[in-house]
Image (cartoon, rainbow, N blue to C red; front, side, top):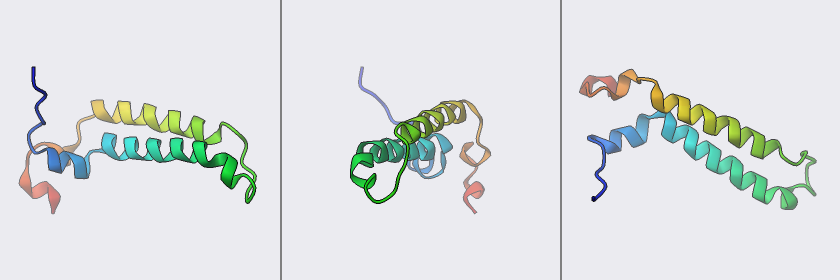
Length: 79
């Protein structure tokens, strides 16, 4: 079966909190990977970015289940 994009996928990409939080989780994961490099400039305990990434990922899952009024198909919601 071929995967299909959701209707108005571009609008979902711009406005959905699950997308925003997923991107933030990816950024925090990248920070955890870069921690040995930036650790020389500032001291951050190991696991902080990983823990934050986990929390943000949980938020992304929860936000995926919550109805977002500006994504219901009303074209005036963008204004």
